[in-house]
Structure formats: C-alpha cells, structure tokens
Picture 1 (tube, helix red, strand yellow):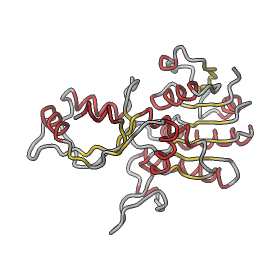
Picture 2: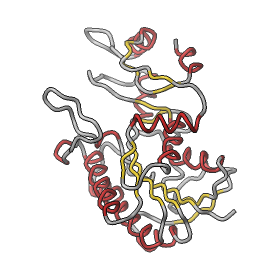
Picture 3: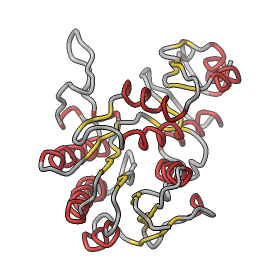
Picture 4: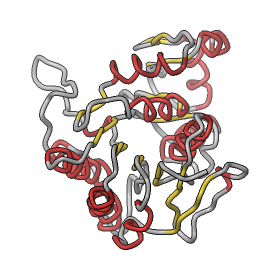
Length: 287
C-alpha cells in the first residue's frame, strides 16, 4: 500500500494511537522515526518507516515527499530540561521545519497537535475559550511556552496558504503509555504512594483513543482553524458511533477515597474533579 499519510511522533503515546486509527481506516501510513526510536508500539502494523529528525530539514523533505496528509504529533514533552533550548529546537524550530517541508511537497492537509495549555488563562470576571487571545507571558514553563510559539508557527503557515488544522487536546491517559509521559507518571506515582504532595488545582484528562479519533476528525475541519473541544466531540461522536457523555467537575467519592488512602495528605481530604468523556461501561466500572 502506498503511504499517503505521514505521522510524526508515531512511536510515542499519542502518535502510535493515531497510527492505529489510520491503519484501521485503511490508510497507508508513513512514520517519521529517529534512528534511536523504539518501534514496539507499532509492531505488526503495515507502516512505512522513514528515519529523520525535526531539526533536520532535509530529512523532513524526504519524509513529506509523496504524502497528501501530515499529522504532526511529535513533541518534546518534558516539564523540565537541563538545557531548555532542546525543547524549543524540537517543538518550535522543528514545527517550522516540518510546515515548510509540507508546503514544498504540496501537502493537502496538515494537522498540528497543540495542547490545551496554550489556551488563555482566566480573565477577571470571565473564563477564556479558544477565541480568547493569549500571550506567551501567560505560559508557565518551557514546554507550554514552546508549544504556544509552535502554535503561532502553525497559524502563520495557515495564513500563508497551507491547509493547517490545530487541535488542542488535554492530558491524554490510557493504554501503551510505556515511557510514561509526565501525565502518566503522575498517575503511576499517585497509585503507588510515591507522590509526596498534591496541589489544589484542576486537570482535564481524556482517553488517548478519543484523542486519536479527534485527530482523524480534524481532517474534516476547515483549513487554518482550531478544533474546539465542542467541535472535537461532535466530530468524534460521528466517527465513534457510540454513546458518550461528560462527567464534569464531579466530586467522585470513590476516587477521593482511593487517593486519600494512597497520598500522604495533610488537612482536608482530596477533592478530585473528573473531566472528559467516557463510555457508559467505563463509567459503570468506575463507580
């Protein structure tokens, strides 16, 4: 099968799920991988591998040759790095390089994986949404700043004529997070009693399969737009053809009890808000 779709980050957590969903739909997939990348998560899948690096424009030109669609899922997802420049080189410069390679190759649609973290922080008297203008100064930490700047590169490419769609998923969780990601590590450490403290904050989580389905749905969006959460799930519902609902801001007693039993909490018990969709069966098992 001729590969018509390129996926970066294909050997990673989200990227491998995107690849699986594309393969299930009968698409020919080309995976951009580094020479050192483990390919376990793609074992047995009919995928064409091409070696390259986001910081190597020539390798990206080769990777984009002949493909019609690009899913740019790859990112340096670290909350801390000894040399923060590495994060910016991969996330910002790498995204710019890939956008240019896609433009030169005449790619028909480019889906860029951003993050919910780039959405503006709350304003006085109002909550932000995807249309609220944010600034880089609002981004906390090098990862969020780099993703914000990379998103600006994607917007600029869209304004210049490249058919770009930006998706902003929240924290993905689910199977095959083998590394694990920083989000997965938090869950593992909380479950095993190795998290020394917790912060009174909020975190929106979403199943990684739904993130992958959302990426596929993003190809149906207009060029140069952001796929908002409401649009994401409306599109995903069509693809999934199965009932879903939201459990938003729920003070889930069972989860609170489990966390309180495992975390060395001081003072008040843990208050947990569960966000994101799940199937009826999943919800029943969690109760």
